[in-house]
Length: 388
Image (cartoon, rainbow, N blue to C red; front, side, top):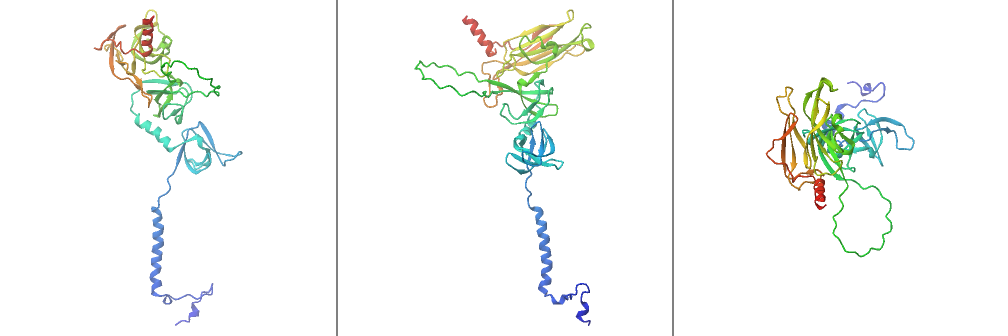
């Protein structure tokens, strides 16, 4: 046997403890403790992580700041539509992180939360395959809204001159302009009560649109110009052309157009007024006079309460196919606006169809001209004439 002192550690000067000095119980607990530590580390994987919160920039463009103070430094630039991860909530400010890892503070009113973003995503999904009623061009930059009205949430900023597809129209009350304090009310005078109808609400139109990227949302109608050919835009006679469609093309070597092929159109017109319970009240067919090299009105129908979309069949290149068009008109006075959504409820409608032979337009539908479907303002004019 070697002496115990021969096992002394040369560096520390301490004697090692032989294994036979440990009790059997301590030797059995050591592996159990090691196993328990490993189990605790593994259970950490099943602990649910906090849900990440995201916001989306609706402002035109802004910067992240390194602190909330009167004097701060710019950390990063963020643009409209960009997604940001929320790191911390402050008073009127959010601390966020970009996808590139840049962290800074942004004003809370310059972003929308996930709930509002989901509304826009649902609009895109619901209206992905809706038919296009007409096309229009945006006059100036405008934000997409999740519902018609000036108080609805906005998100993506559409650029000027962006070409948009029109899907649906809605009319909602226009908010009243701020006014000065009213004057003191005078003492009321007792008079005979007369039942007068309430004045009509001040409405404004909105269009549900889809842009070239597939984004869907609501845009105020006054910010749009319907996509109308310049050649017939001046023939509207004070009306608004809500849609113009090519019926056929005629050859004219004296016309200043590409390929000497001049298109002839059917156009649908409406008054310059918002809140109408119909889409158009007049139909006109413009044909080309090859001798005078100008457009002329070949057919006109007024006093309608018509609704988009319309169906148009263009003539073939060999003119073997006759151009036709058809549209829906109301047959009663039940047309109105939905008070909840602002969309048009036409009531009962019929389809009126037409065929074009040369420069003559013939009615092909079995239904006679719909006299009962006159637009409201035309009916009022007729009553005034009868009274006079």
